[in-house]
View 1: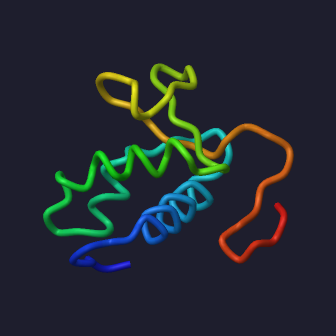
View 2: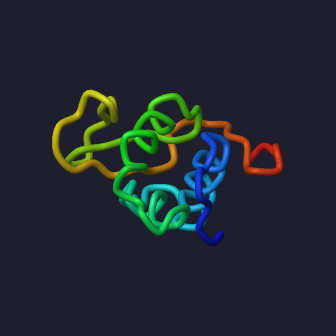
Length: 95
């Protein structure tokens, strides 16, 4: 996706879900991968990435494999597809 000067929450959510779908169910990725994919100066974007992850219906944050609130968690977290039966892909199709 190239860098964006001021990525929107929608752009963050889209890339986040894309990374999760490419990794597949049960696999995790670092939130910094989302930020790095959107901005050259990615560190200031990290709080927004965590905020978007907190409300994304198809993403969950984990620490040591245990689901956590990404905004309340202290220390490193990983993101993954939420473990549940039905999810929508970026085109809105049910997986």
